[in-house]
Length: 516
Image 1 (spheres, rainbow, N blue to C red):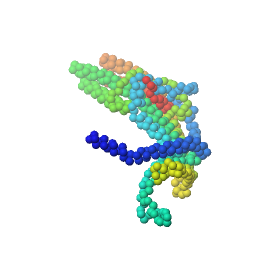
Image 2 (tube, helix red, strand yellow; image 1 turned 120 degrees about the horizontal axis):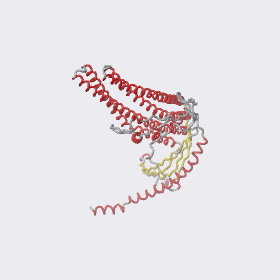
Image 3 (cartoon, helix red, strand yellow; image 1 turned 60 degrees about the vertical axis):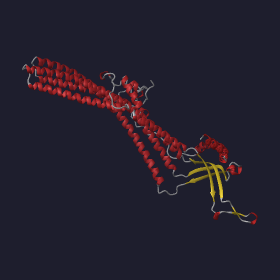
Image 4 (cartoon, rainbow, N blue to C red; image 1 turned 90 degrees about the vertical axis):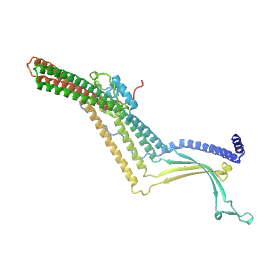
């Protein structure tokens, strides 16, 4: 086997095919060097010529102009405040939400949440699309190479007449070619530049969409966390009420044995115990469902969520200046995204308008062509071509006209959408302000009610023990106290959630997680 392999190597070493291949490789190297030099010359010319041609051309279509300011001087229900650069919206989320456990959850969500990852991929997709569009601003250079051998039919062969005698030309012929082709569309009317402007606005819009998702994620995690803490507090109150009712039921059953309580009293308290158990079961179900939802926000499978500070130790966002409504245009990412969509739609009007004008393109070709490979790099094998072409639509059944009208309508729609989202943003801020103020007032009033009912339960119990009132008075007072305690905690939750909504509506929560 080894001898056979050595013999094959010797044969290949002396094979004429190897010499031919080596000669072809040398020829290809020389061709490549010449084409490379020509390509570099083209690149230098394009570097100077392309910007010059772009500067000499015009850009059809309207330039973007921001829509008239629709924001009022202040928010509804906003108290007067001194102008300051330190507003609630400029505070990073880790300064707003100071519970360490909540901060950990938010960092986990930013790192793992799939909506954030999808939004990030969309940004990359928009950037790549911009790169595709910008490529049309530059010449396109392609390299072509070919090698062919042809046999001409005998009845189609030409003849030469040396010495007066006809001699047929050889039936076989070879053809070798290596060429560089350059093509470039002169952007005299700004079609490509307007397309680039539109694509660039789409990139900025996708970046703002990602910040919108980030703001929503941060505040959604905070709201879910506060809701879990409030549900924990409800379970605590329900468990305490259940314990009180179970003790009272045991006492009633003992009294019935001694003939001092009736079956009616025992059954009433047994029903109250069952009611508390049912409420506790519903609350546990709600806790589990909220933990599942929060786990998904964290990009994790449903699991238990670790808590930090207790619900009663959580405080709403302090009263920090809100800033002027006009600040929303620069702070809220959804408004900035809508504006960039308007910029993109405005630029597409120029693209559609440029279709009414001629498209002028330049083409050139440089290369070598020969019937023998060894002659491919000789001077007489070199050739080139430069050409210019113009094309103008004469009849398209109104296609360009309707495209232009559609682009203007799309721009008008983008304007109205921008105005709409501005008004919606103002409404969200005002709603959050009212909710924060009124839920805070409701919480304070319910706290007073709880304190009054606690005293009422104490007095009812004393009167019942002294035989001065029926058990129904005590039972009614206990029911009212339990309901008021639950309502008080829910009002506190409403105040916290309103604070979070206010922070989001002002454009807060768009910062990435800080480096640890």
